[in-house]
Length: 257
Image (cartoon, rainbow, N blue to C red; front, side):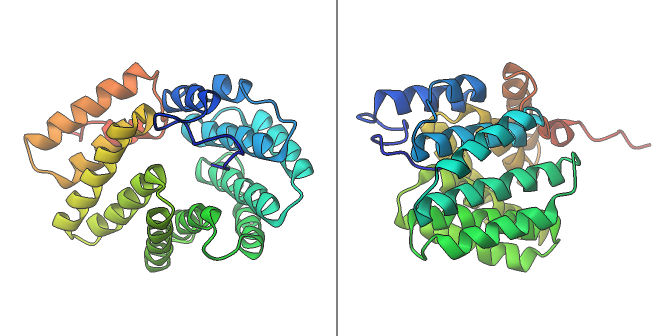
């Protein structure tokens, strides 16, 4: 998510009260309510608002027009390279989500937008880690290029570590673990999924806890796998079926004869 001029991102004591309120709503899948707290009159606020609504699209498969409108506002207010790069990064994420969920194939737009972001966001800048992560998502899920995805996730992981971004670390741990699981490296996968879950529980990132539990379940053996999956199912239902794509992962396997 784009960073604002206000103090912190709401995840730790001493952060700006507005950011704390935004974080609490965001972490409980209340993206529209969180976005309503932000007045898009400055580039940082408009970028953060757009990022919230783009994230809602990814998790709920709804709200596409609102995200587009918010993104256009953010793009109009962006003036510095960092701001234009952050807006391009969100544009790429929205196009990626649309393609991933089968709303409309915007893969070329996603690649172009993330390419623009890479030209604008300086290497080593805080926003570069998020950009690298999203380029990894494209490589893994749209280009079916796991090795390129792994390289991008590792760059993002290093950047998130350098800039003390625990939420992004929870994502890089989880996606690196997913690639390990695909390659049969169970111990490495289990470790990465467990780290992702630990961070999300510590941050109170409720909407991301169910996916973390379900992923760890995929790397565990019974009965622990069923216990984790049931806990994920309970959280998923508590949040009203969000994220929508988790339903497939939580569906029990069909019985065999």
